[in-house]
Length: 140
Image (cartoon, rainbow, N blue to C red; front, side, top):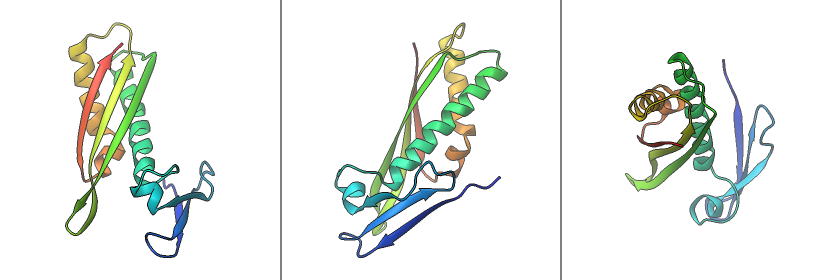
C-alpha cells in the first residue's frame, strides 16, 4: 500500500508561501508558511500534520491491540504534541508525546498501561519517527 501527499513552495523561506495536498483530497492546496510553522500564525504546518497522523495511527493500533486482548473500547481520544527544535544548525523533530484518555469497559489500569505501551511501540508512525516518543495514558 502506498499513500501520496504533495507540497509546493514559492519564494524565500520567511516571505514565501506554500500549499500541501493529500492524494485522498482530504487536504487540497492547504496553505502554509514560515509564520504558520514557526511564529504561531493560524494555519497548518508539517509538524501539525505529523501529529495528526501519529495520534490517528496510535488510536487505531491501540484499538486493534485491545481487541486482540478481548477488550472493546468505547472511546480512545489521543493528542500528539510534536516538538520541533533547533539541532545541528537546522531544525529537527525531536519528540512526539502521545496523551491518550480512553474508556474501556472491564480493563484494569495495569493491563491498560501495558497495552497502550504496545500500541505506542507498534504504531507504524511511531516506527518511522526518529524521535523520542512518550505516552501518558488515562482510563476514564
